[in-house]
Length: 60
Image (cartoon, rainbow, N blue to C red; front, side, top):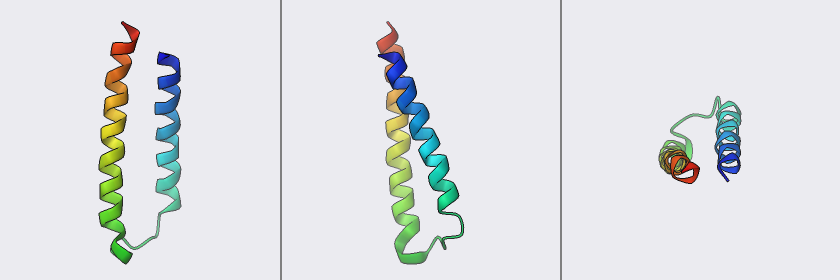
C-alpha cells in the first residue's frame, strides 16, 4: 500500500510541475487567477503533507 501512496505523491508532484510550466506567462492578476492559484496550492500542499505523513503510519 505504501508503494501506491508513493506513486500518487510522485504523480501529483509531476502534474504540478507540468501545470507550472503550462501557466507560465499568464498574468497573475488576470480574472482572479492569483486567488484561485493560491487556494488550490494550499489545498494541494495540505493533501500532500497528509499523504506523506500517512506513509509512516502505513509502513508500521
